[in-house]
Image (cartoon, rainbow, N blue to C red):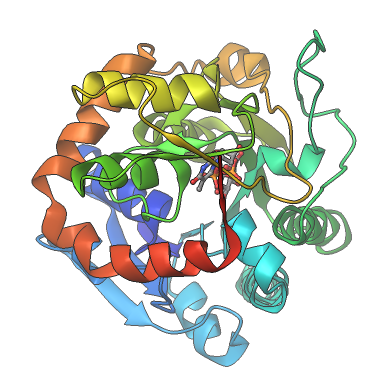
Length: 333
Ligand code: DAU
């Protein structure tokens, strides 16, 4: 099998390439990535038989021949950080909507199977005491420019399946953590703040809940869908990992040997989604998938260890990320 992995130098895509190399030696891989700030060639360093093509997926003329030679396309490429989408929405519309359009057009032309990676944020948010979780029947209700652009991309995929018979599946996953995650995101930001001798930064009161999943569990679910998923279907991926942000920060501080209250409250994200929660029972029941990382503290400890031992991977980006945050976030006394 020849796989085309879009966004394969980003966090989840690079981990997907690593997992595939470890577990499927017969699969050959081409990574297509525009190598924006969120991508990192070093995330793929040392991997054999991975071809890397540096190009923007929204350029159909360049993506088309790459799709032509692939058996399957896994489409990770996306702008993914909510805070950036609030600052500057246009790159999100371009990458997430136009990028998906061009991948779809190439798959339509060449009859190539597509798996589209999406997010639980397309469903909006839940109240803290809402007994329900997101499932494949939850109506779309995105809150931010980022989640609206991902919702748009999902709808394009559904339309191309129905109108043109494109052989595609979609997955919507909850918050990922693990190695190679950009330091702008919540967990790596806090770990690297502590490693740099500073205090973690919590938005608002920290009561917002995210449903954490280790990136390897997300990617093993993607492989279950590639192997056994039904064309045209949407699968929700989650590992029952609901935790509020305050608890995550305090756990990181505790695991790193610091005072669990040694963090700062900073100004909140505008339109901040309160809670995400995924019902992944369809995926588990129909495709027999289950997560391996069921102990969140153990997964966090492994992630802390990775960032501790890979300073050279994240340090070049850290100062610029913090300078950008400093322009919009104030410490609340
Ligand atoms: O739910 C899936 C989504 O998870 C993905 O689609 C997104 O690409 C991914 O970025 C993530 O979105 P979030 O906005 O939930 O992730 P983020 O890491 O930015 O923030 C997680 C939570 O932590 C959120 O409630 C905001 C809060 N936060 C974030 C940062 C960066 C803080 O309290 N302090 C921070 O410094």
